[in-house]
Amino acid sequence: MDHRGCLFKFAPFTLDADARVLLRDGWPLRLQPKQVDVLLALIEKQGEVVSTRDLMTTVWGQTAVEPGNLTRHISELRRALGDEDEEYIRTVHRRGYKFVAQVTIVNPSKAAAGV
Image 1 (cartoon, rainbow, N blue to C red):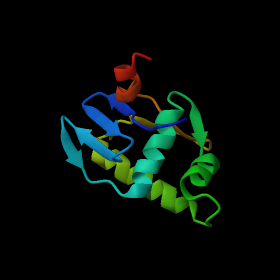
Image 2: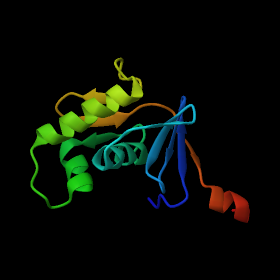
Image 3: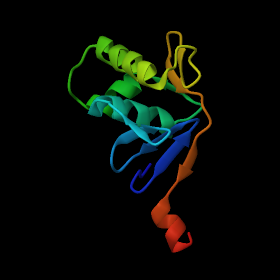
């Protein structure tokens, strides 16, 4: 998916894909670049289970990393989202993760062009 110009809105959050910034009610949250990558990868597949392997490949490419790195980033994302009850990112036991919140995608450049 081409993220250029996209804003992903869910609950009180807006993820600006170009600026790579997550806002909560308009206020920026501190996320590491890899955390933004994980969030984008999950949002792209909203409602689908994304395997741990696929997430690691998407985020780290061919770089060898331990699965614990992904687990840590998911945990930190949940903390930033206040997601103790997994209302945004759900763990699917032995399979991976799923973004379960409803997402609205806004592409300002296409909206301005009338597309």
